[in-house]
Image (cartoon, rainbow, N blue to C red; front, side, top):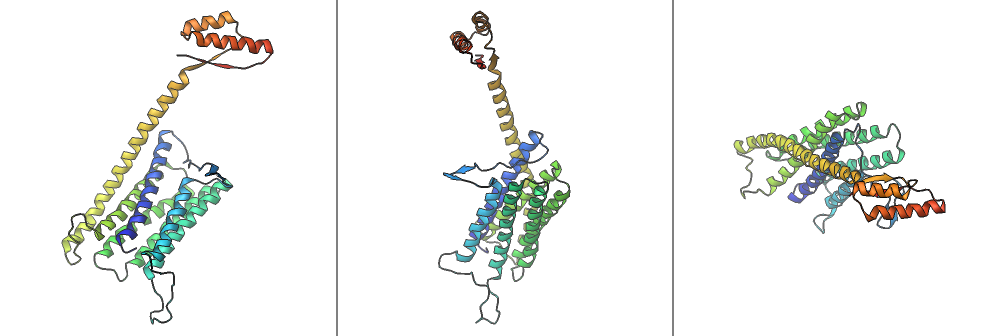
Length: 316
């Protein structure tokens, strides 16, 4: 993963997850929900019926790390890093960085599987299982990132150490959420740290291919100082993205609520037991004209046949 492409895929995956969770959290706060409700895939997908309820979040946790694992072993095409031990090499172990990355991806997949099992059981312990699996994943990420800086350049060491900070804070928040579930401030802090973690990963991509065209210099103390400065800016960037996502969700929520209220106000119940004269009076009062006359005729037929029904009387 020590390339632009190797950091881009995990960075985009983390960003997708962070935006998804932030949107879910924003809508839950706007709807005054006491718990987060994860949307599930349709039970019939691409002509196949799913045996278990699966959330979009679980699919992302399993699919993207699985694809990244394959890339770790076989990208670029023609290479094979699947082996861990080279018996002809005195160092014995090979491809340390790749196996560290694969281990991290494996724990994300494990978290996705825990989500699937939890959503299938719907037991009181299911949410705790999800949070515990996520907390374990980010503890592993922080631990492996500390080991990952061995034999790295002076420039890469502070970059990866700063990556450990939001990962460890996420793990702590998830650990607290095991015992204090459905806590709105924890939702907000988790969303913020997830956005910071994902944007910082994309910042690492920029260090491999600088936008300015000028490479970062590991021997320049000023360049090293700006790494910490940029990380502080990413804290503000994450908060700005979170506020923006909340604002967009708020606009959508209010627009959707007003639309549903307007749609519901256009209909009133018209009692079929009423006589045709009473129905015509109702038509005259609401100005619906021939539509209510048609409703009265249908109601009369239903009454004659002994069919009891309730017709919707549109108010236009």
